[in-house]
Image (cartoon, rainbow, N blue to C red; front, side):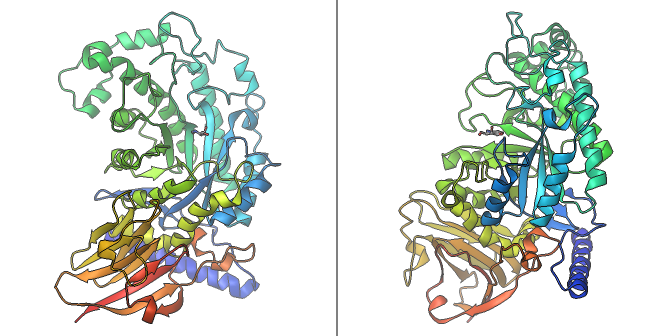
Length: 553
Ligand code: DGJ
């Protein structure tokens, strides 16, 4: 990893230097998304993950627009919200019905418009392929496909009726059509996006089946269900005794659910592989979740998708998918944390592509970062239905993280970031960094010690501490006090506490928009001292980022 990081950093310096040259030559800000940039990709090492963009780890400070906002007339309601949020990445759909209005004829005009406007706003994109599945249903199929239910069939329930509002994964013509359309999208991106504005693509949307049937009972599905479980799945699951057995024999009461997960994943894995063969961007699938603590039986949640109990099946069936990503709409923070634990695995980078975007839940961004997330992105943050006030809590997160987003991504990859969210009834947290301990006190103010902090009236606190060197840390937080203790027993001395320059977000501020581009760096703003440091480092509602150098006496 160290070698890779060195290369990354060299690339980063070179890109920074080029950007500076462009500035000097043209006398105006240079978009940071430079031509010839290496392909975005995901790296996994020692259980840590990074999304590499422009040759260096990148942290997705994301926002997803509403489902029907990716139309030219609506984009003016999207970009101002992204700018107000200080998001560095927009997640936005590409609709199959729009992209392939006639079979085999592709309309790339909206994708091209989104690319152009994203570059103007210095924002990266995650495109969402609304293809065969959207929330378990085939509602985004083009008209020409919808009118051929014989070729694009819905699933058959046990009673023999095709009345489940979910596509059958046993439909060769549908598979071929989806593969062809998704390939066309990726082929177009390869040609139209040398700047790597698009950094990742979601394949389908919350695939699987809601209600009606746990799996498909069509004749084709029944035949596959009665056949031996594929050997590669048995091997991936480490099931030694199942060779030759059919699904029922091998998986018993889980057979229907596991069979559906394999079938859906196998279909989507082929769509993903076809697209990747055209243009190998990172690909992910998002999942509608089951309850992570008390799941209930299959059928009470969407089956077939990448729920926490079938992640191994998905990994085996769809190797072209880099990330299985949870859409987290849990209000209960214990459940939210349990979801994060389920999806943060050595073989699966943690990425939250959808989550609640308002209220106290926004602090859970820090719960995700504390578990090594490569990104976090609330749903429905555009001005078609959301007000500026509602964006404020997420905006605070992003303004706190924006000046150091590259450093946080890099240090998280090195396992040196710890981040926490406030929990009701728990006023304090400690973070152990070996020679130093960071004490977080939520709701502590002024001269009060962080060690006996009462907590805020509602749990809105959040804090992040990232170790740069043995005695140096990036520190940011909201509604909390942060202080350090030396493990040696000596008295903590703030040798220097530097605050970063806040990142401007105006249409002409590209040169200062390090977060969205090739490089971000801690730009010195001022030194905190006196009242600002004598009683610990107090954070309120202002987005402030510090670089803290410690000593002991
Ligand atoms: C999850 C889906 O993935 C989104 O597209 C959207 O439908 C939200 N649910 C609910 O609004």
